[in-house]
Amino acid sequence: MTQSHAEIIDVRSLVPAQRHAKIFNLVDALKPGTSFILVNDHDPKPLYYQLEAEYPGQFSWIYVQQGPDVWRVEIAKLAKAA
Image 1 (tube, rainbow, N blue to C red):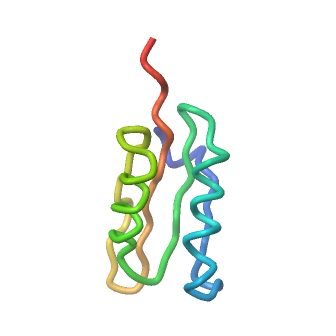
Image 2: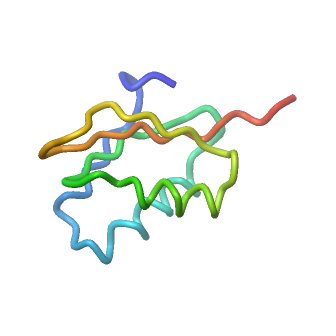
C-alpha cells in the first residue's frame, strides 16, 4: 500500500462511541488492495484486535506515526490470493 494515495480519515473530532462504527464501515467498504490512513488522538491498538477478530487475515495495519499526540495508521484490505 502507499500512503500517498490513501484517503485520510481523521476521527479525532468524533465522540469515542462513534469512532469504531465509522472505521468498521470504512473497512467494510474497502476494495482489495486499497487503504486509508486513520488519524487518532491515542494509540488505536484495541481497534486492531477488533478488526482482526472480525476480518482475520484480511487487512494490514501499518503505523505511519506513533504519538505522543497523534497516531496515524494505514489500514488496507489485502488483495485476495489468486
